[in-house]
Length: 142
Image (cartoon, rainbow, N blue to C red; front, side):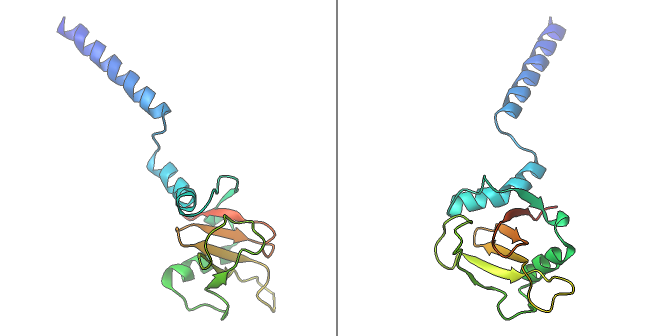
């Protein structure tokens, strides 16, 4: 009788684990990917329509720029760290001063080029390779 009860409890436990897994429990890796999205949604708008790109999949200079942002500079251009106005309206609509922009260097370019990382106060980062015509949400965990 005890053996049957143990198997029944084990089966019930397995069923509960399966049910809970299907109702939104996420792994730490999934949480790390979702965190910039959740931060942006909680802060000022919906980022669910953005393509998510791993930082490691962007040009290597994007990682260099991200690392500089984490260190607080020094930045290669005086415009780096200034407020991004979101005039194009492609990023979630947030209060003035919420976003800041940073140059992602373009090898061989004599100017700042078209590539930027835009940071949000909620901890989200966006990449544009075409000077604000489009943006990807950056997954900085990979």
